[in-house]
Image (cartoon, rainbow, N blue to C red; front, side, top):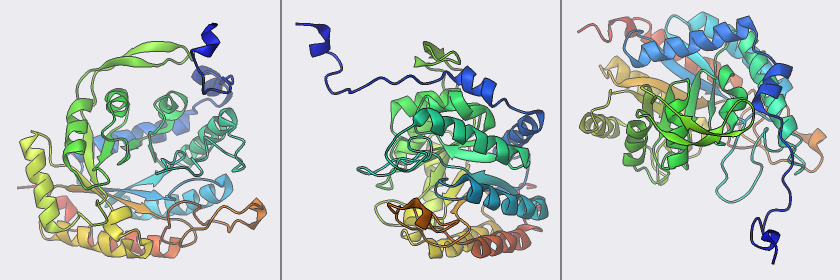
Length: 358
């Protein structure tokens, strides 16, 4: 019996993937992009450390599938960011990887042509190019880290990272987060369980050693220092919201018990809006009101937003795709997004500078 009868029985192929340094060499980080990324990270750390009074807002499409529409959105968001930047630190949501409950389109990196050809090598280059283009606009980007090898390819272009509800409990993702160069938001579990996120923050704050990928594309023993800027992201759970004042108070108590800073981000989408994107403005308004009434632990919000409202199925004929409309979760449209952010800026402009003075 040969080893092929024992190993990789259900593997059909091992296709070659360029090393991270090869893709970096082809699409190098520019000075302007580097400044955007570093500035975004620095501001987020200051917000989490209470050295900057602003609220950060991670806003953008549920997922990127069309880079042309994505950059159209980014340009609009950059112009808006410039107007409200004294109150709100805007981070564009740039998600390339989509965890699926069962199966489905897994995102721009995994299947960039949306035809089940799974040309991951091309998807990775396209994703890096898109992030470069966004950074060149002067707009920081945030993404979900799903594949633990992904950050080696594009991590130098990310200012904020999320770990999703399905992976917060994963040791692999906690270890990876301990070495990421960005602040990391851990979502509560899909059931609403807070402890998985609290434990993830604690775990990621410590040093770890694990198998990973180096810049040459070789398997390596990765040794991390620990990430001091982990925080919780509330996305609701078990079909119910968890952003109300009672839920926020319970999270604050859990953070105190874990001896963690009171840094809470609320995702206005998912179960917090009962998976109805049009309810996101109400969630945002509630968070703004809690801050105006004296809450000091709410430091950020997330919004799923696109040029057009709602979402659409992926058609067999991709030319039939509606421009600027999500192919994954439903989003609010640009007009609604603009109003949500401007309204928040007006209501918080005089409140935030005094928030941490006592």
